Image 1 (cartoon, rainbow, N blue to C red):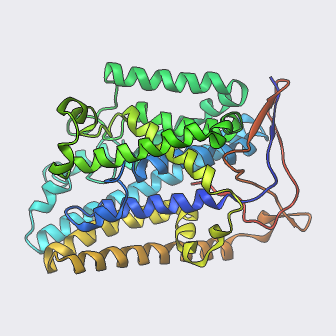
Image 2: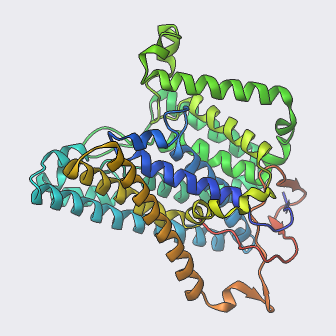
Image 3: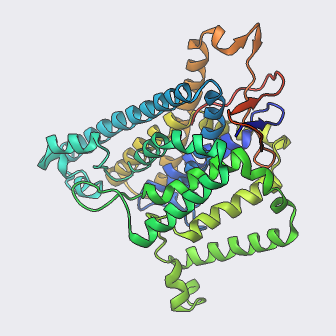
Length: 417
């Protein structure tokens, strides 16, 4: 089957960068335990959170980026994908080592043994060689270091999924749903060290990643009617309100009284490990409303106040790694120097400022280091587009995947996550 991707006019979709940056900020704030910063993220106001959004956008952008590379052949496209997998894996291992070194040093230096247990760093002292081995195998993960291993697995398995999706997109999507249902029904997961299983079950969370890819390559154009439906709008808003109240009820006994115990227990505790269906639905509702009310050419996307968020989304991997490390450092500083609300807000603001500075530095560094011939073809910038969520279409007609690109643009091309 020959597939031609009818891409929209090449234009960077700043919404992807904006919300990826927002996901990074939310994950940083949510990873500083026992502070008001958690309430500055959005995990306490609905079923899904920054991790769900990060994985979905990763699938969406990966499909667009590597579909273009698959145009030069499956082997070439796969090699580019595995190169990115290696970059993510390397970033995780570097973060893993620095993170554990900080925990061990601060625990010894300030006589704070509780840090070891709180951040699941016991093997650092009890079994360091085994810890290193299991860390390299992605089986051992200290607290808050679960996202990048999930990302490594999803990207590593993406080549055959993308190959299938370019030929039989609906079959690939149905297969993803069936795997998700089977993983939940039969409790399939990957083992962790020293015991238990992965906090983010990749057999369940792959559904978000594949959904993003499917929407990018074929689904969004076919589901465009959802964006215009008044009925869908009413139901979506009602569901978001219900999700917010139900989530807040877990923290507020007064709200809990609004629900029958059986209903409350259906949603609490929130099953994050196996990506509960209501989490998935919550994110899909947010995406529908986001695409409906924030068009790709919305003037507000260019607003100066949003540029730090957009920049953090464009340099997502570096910003995420720095955010995880800053969350631990911020928690330690608060425990050492005082845990007042003003101190917590200062730690949050400082962390976001540092993440933003890292994003701007990496953007500048990549720009000055990039050879001019990599960004130009015959004196013009090589076009590459993200494509808006609501306009990407796939047309079937033969056997070899082909990508029909648009005209030249001055917009910045899409980068890997």
